[in-house]
Length: 264
Image 1 (cartoon, rainbow, N blue to C red):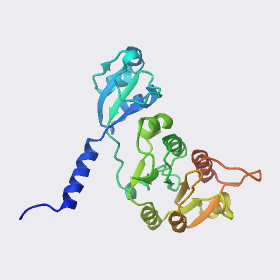
Image 2: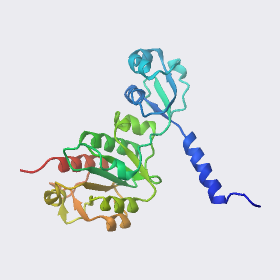
Image 3: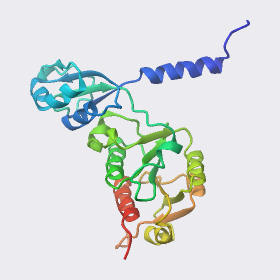
């Protein structure tokens, strides 16, 4: 029939509408306060106890939101039972940071751009901790895949301790394609691999004036073969003992510090 849209077009439009309608709940005083103070955050519903409302009074007033005051014994928000909400929860739309090419050349202007790529890191607490370290050390972005990676959630936001509102967290379709895009932008791609021959410090020394992309996998599975093959170099964080390992959030903090701390 003339004028009928192809199935793939209809599916794409449905996915776009679903993404636009998607919301998540942030919880905890710190995460909620930072989201209330973030002008880029699209906020939908604020639920607080009387005590939390008093603690967040300035942020609530500045946001212009009308909070729903809840009984702390019957907190009417769909959170996991173990979530420590501290009497505050905020329904929001996910943040949109923009394209990789624009975001990844940001960060402190006095230092070369620095980004972190995460390969199959699914634990929101690890990703939240990586975001926090990335903010501390001036990374332009943390990048993960749209699938097989921790999405933006309340647990991630709480672990990030406010960094989710300020540190770009980009979700891409294909990590290897994004790595190639970063390479074309002048980034050197350093893959963290405990079995690599060269240390991170040695690899960084002649490259401290260049943009660096740190590519990291989850503890255990590590980097996928395709990801390794796309890196410029595989490097390791040396250990003082015969056996040692760091989880991805700790390794990210060490690697980010190494990138921002010239030797000598």
